[in-house]
Image: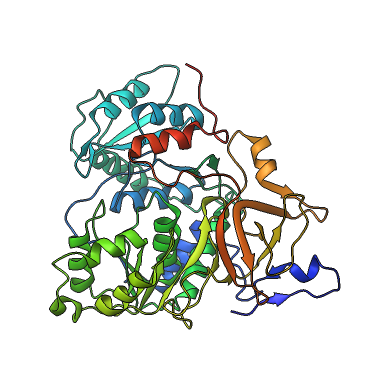
Length: 453
C-alpha cells in the first residue's frame, strides 16, 4: 500500500502520513449497497451453519435475525443500537433511558444465558403509556408477556402490510447520516458511509473475490464482526457463514471444513482456542481451504502465528488497528508481508486516511518519536451521543476544519509510515475477572451519560 508523505518543508507536514487516494470512496447509503448486491450477486447468501438462530437490535447478540434487523433498520433511515450481551440488567436499563428507542428486539436466551429478568423489564416498557416502545420477543412463537408480538408474528404482520403497498427506497437518507450507535467508553454514532467504506476497504486488503466464503466467529455487536465480517461480505458479494450464536471452537472447525471457507476472521484468543481442540486433527487440517483472514483486537505472539500457519495453513493474515470511534479499521498490514516476520506493527494508514503522532503539548513529532496517535479522514465518528463536550475533546477540529481523532494510543511511526502501538496515554484495565464488572466500568465512565436514580 502506497504512502503519500507530504514534504512541503515544515516538520509537521513531513510527519503526517497519508494513505493513498485510491480506490475512491463509495458515496452510498446502505440501501444503495443492498441494491447493488441484489443486482450483481443475486445468488450469494449469508447463512447460519447450525439450526440455532437468535436476536438483535436493542438486543443481545445475534446470528441471522441480527442481520435482518440491522440491514432493515438502516435501510429505512432509522438508527440501530447494539447492546453488548454481557450488560447487566441495570446497564441495559440505563442504555434504554439514554437512547430512547422506538423498538426493542430481545432474545429469550443467548447461548446458555436466560434473559427472563430482561424480558420482564422491557415488557413493562411496552405497557407504559408514557413510553411508546414496541417490543418484539425472539425465540418463541407466542408472547408470554402481554400483547407484544414474537419475531415470527412481527415478520408475518409486515408481509401483510407490504402486500398492500409499494415500498420505495427512502430518498431522504443521506450517506452522512448516523446509522448505528455502539457503546464504547461512550456512545458513538458512526456515519453510514463510514461503515460501508470500511467494509469495502477491509475486503480490499484481503483481495476478496465473489468466490470467497467467509467464516465470522467474532460477535456482531462488535465492530470487528459487523464491519470486517458482515459489511465486508455484503460489499464484495461474498457468502458469509455464521458458525454459531456464541463462539464455539468445535462448531467453527466443523464449519470451516463443511462450508469450505476461504476467509477467516478471529481474535487471537479464538485462534488459540481453535488450535487447542482435539477436533483439529491432522486429517481435519488437511481438509481446510483457508487462504486469508484477519487477526485483530489484541497483541500477537510469534508462537501463535506459527501454529496458525502450521495447523490451519493460514499465512496470508492481516493485522489491522481499529476502534469504534474510527468505524472499525484505520491502519493495517498487508497480505504480501508475512506476520511471522513482523508481528509487532499494525501497518500503514488505509486509503483516504491520514495519521500523525503528537506530544502532550500537541506538537507533531517526527518518525521514531513516541507519542499519541491522531487520525483524520472519512472514518472519524460523528461524536458521543448527548455528550458534546467529550466529542469535542476526542475529535478536535484544526485550523483547516479537519476533525482529528485523538486515539489515546501511544505509538511510534517508522520513516515509511508503518505504525507500532506501544501503550495507552492513560492507564488501562488490563484484566478483569468478572465480565459484569468490566461492562459496569465501561458504562459508568465519563464519556457516557446515565440516568439518575
